[in-house]
Every structure is written in structure tokens, then in C-alpha cells.
Image (tube, rainbow, N blue to C red):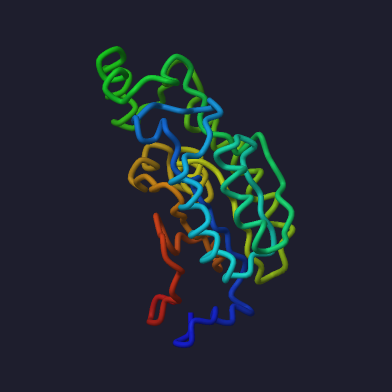
Length: 222
């Protein structure tokens, strides 16, 4: 971004994917595992979405695609209102289905399913609560993201509005990381985002868990 606050010219820099997590929900505050449960945004979450949308709109996105769960779709709607872009809703961008874990608090999961939780944190392939494997989430979400990215102009920007776990696994898949390394990416705060840029050898992680506008990398690693 320039000193005047205008977005830097990106011509010739390749396509860009912004993966944006939804705003706060009541279950986030209560530390309940949401999964595919369709929980609404809180008033705080709506405010987070509006603030983030103002920033992301200045990046002049070419397309918006969202999970069809309302916490993501309503977050996406704030950006659509500013940009005039349509939102494409995709079931494949939903959060991980976690079976009996859904609706439980973090503490309840540890008490009832401590061994399963520990195995997941070690990077083992675990069907949390009898639900999806992380690789299965990536199998359904990453092709959706790539399919929409392929429709962009050569220097276009796609905003993907989804969920923390789905975004993390999608980033891991697009970067070509082995699944047991995906946890090392860390989580996203509500209404923060990560940015992938197209490079000569594929997608690169340019920003992670950001809440301000991405700055260009100036230096030998650009």
C-alpha cells in the first residue's frame, strides 16, 4: 500500500486468495465447538465484519465466495454491500463436521474425549467426535477455492469467507504441506484473514491471521 493509503498496483504479480474467517458468534465466546452447526453472528461479530469489510474492499476484490453457513455468509454480505459483488455460496466451504463434539465446550471435550483430543493435537488422523478427517475437509474445500481462483484475471483477487479449521486445512493443502504439519499454521481470530499469492512454484503464504491491510514485501525475498 502506498504512503497515500491507496492500494499498490498489482499488475503482473499473479492472482491472490484472501481467506477470511467469519465474525464472532456466541459459541465462540462460550468456547463451544461449532462445526457445521449454523450459529449466528453476535452484534460484536457484525461490527467486526463491517470493519474488516472496509479494509478488504480497498483491495478491490474480483469475486467473493462463502460457506453457506450464516456466520460466514453474513460476514461476506458486509463486503458484498461495499463492493457490489455477488456472493457465491458453497457448501464445500463449511467448517469441519465434528459429530458429538459439536455444541460441547473446550473443557467438556477434554474431559469426555481427552485421548482423542490429544491425538488430534499430535497431528494424528482423528475423526473428532466421529466426524470428518482434516484431510477430508481439505478434499472438499481446496477444489472449491481453486476452481474460483482459476476464473480470476491474471492479477485478480478472490475473497473466500469460511471457518478457522477449514481455512487452515485449505491453506495446508494449497501450500503442499503434509497433513500432520497443518496444525503449525495456527488459528485465525474472528474476522481476520490469511493471504495466498501465486508464485512461480505455486501458492505462497503472504499473510496469516492478519487484521490490517497486507503490505508489499520489499527486499530480496519478494
